[in-house]
Image (tube, rainbow, N blue to C red; front, side, top):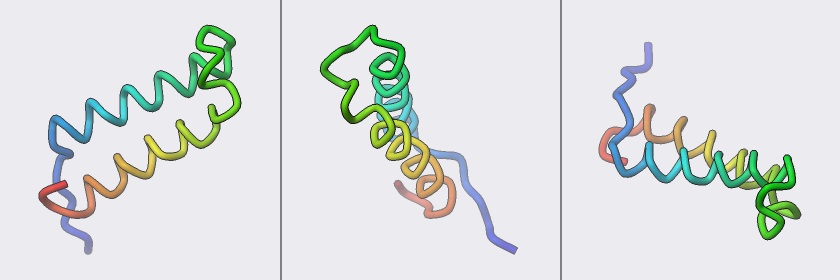
Length: 57
């Protein structure tokens, strides 16, 4: 079984910012992020996944 750890505060904050920018871009509130909205959201989820699997991220 994989030993999961909680993400660090920095990783959590960065993923929240990336995910929020992706959602805001998709909804049209942040036009700069609109072309990359999917990739911003995907990066946020991958960062959260990696920070729970690997300790110290």
